[in-house]
Structure formats: C-alpha cells, structure tokens
Length: 184
Image 1: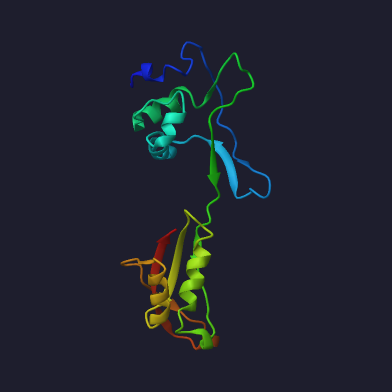
Image 2: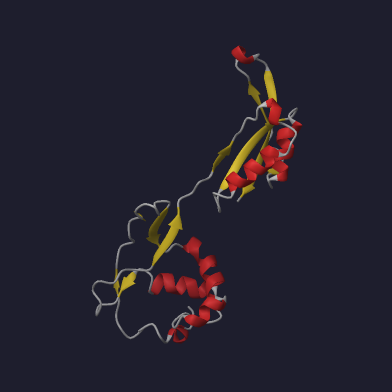
C-alpha cells in the first residue's frame, strides 16, 4: 500500500461512502462524440503522464511525482466515493471520445491516379480521427494503393495477407490481398 500521507490535501479524515460506477453518459451535440464514464485501470498510465507534467503544479492534492501505485490508490480509495458532508458529489468522471476505429477503403478514377492526390486525401481524412485505429487492404498487384497506404503511415501487417474469392460477375477468380494498419 502506498504512503497515504502524500495525499494530505484530500480530506482523509472523513469517512467515505462507496458508490456505484456511473453509467456512460453521452454529451449533447455538438460534443456527442464524447462521453463521461468511471475511472478505469486503463486510465492509470494517462494519469501518471498528466500528473507528472506541468499540470501537477497547479493541482493541490495529487502527489508529485505521481506513480501507477498512486493511481491505483486513488482508484481504490477516492475515485468511487463521495464526501458525506457533500451529498451531491459524485465519483471522478473521465471524458472519453467514442472510438472511430474502422476500415479504410477508397477508389480513385483513372484520370486522377499517379498524381499524389490520394495520399493527400487519405492523410486529410485520417486527421479527423485522432486516436483511432484503421485497417486497410490492398491487392498484391496494386502497388499504387500500397504506396498510398505506406505514405500515410500505414504499416504492412506481416502474416496478415489473405485470399479473397472475387464475384463471378466481376471476373471471378481469387485475388491476393495484403493487410495494413495505422494508429492515428
């Protein structure tokens, strides 16, 4: 257990009441891509990062330096409790962004190919989804698409290649595809 004396400013002398984690709450438009939720252990590394930055010096109660053990202690002892003398208080809420992970696909008319347009378009589109992960596929024979993906920071997934049976109405056969991935 960590030394709780580091948290001198958090009213440790008051008994706390446990509360249930809050349900995820979507914010109203135009912020409906964001929602509130309870603190989770997966948030601990971000707390450590934030509370060891310059931000730490404007906050009263978090210890400095802030460790993963401090985050665990806060989660176990404070984040899901309320002050009895402040009955309207809630636990610590976290603002989260909805995931926009997905599959990237595109088609470019022949007259626009080979000019670098698609790399710029893909890069611009991906800027709209910070923190998201995108998958993409390109035929082994389609070097242009592979170059677009690589220019935009996609990584070829080793061992991720596969075969796709093409519809008979589109010529049939089996095509070899490569898989790519990018964390925005």
